[in-house]
Length: 145
Ligand SMILES: [Zn+2]
Image 1 (tube, rainbow, N blue to C red):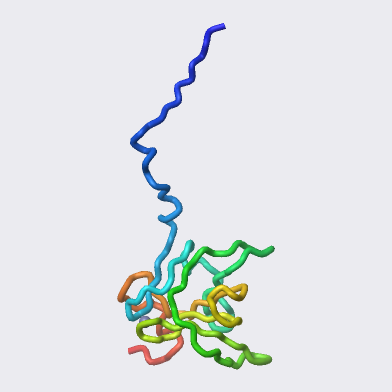
Image 2: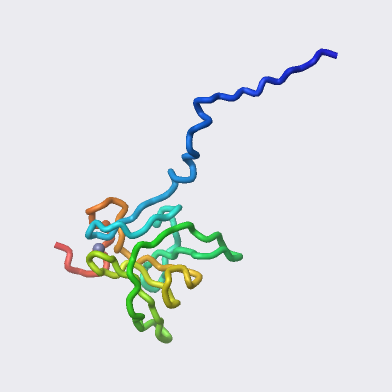
């Protein structure tokens, strides 16, 4: 029986490359003032939205319905806000931009971020391009020039 020598084709040029797939998928979002706010493993545009206020729903833990997103929020927690909703009130623990203090996100549980099952990104608060106002930033006010 002939002896088959399998050559292990080790290409040294590709070995040292970092795995691009883990970092290439990350998206970075900025406040409209240009401050870095969020890095996340999926585009906010592709995530589900709340019916009540259009906020983007970011899942913070795995459950039967889906997998948690991997993300980091760079924002300052502030006092909770009581928001009137149909059929009751909702307590929102808000996170604000550390530079211009605009609210950028909220959750239903006290800080830190990810202490509740979801984090909500306020509609129109973040942009993927630094220094650019997102196209939906003024959707809710009628004062479009
Ligand atoms: Zn800001």
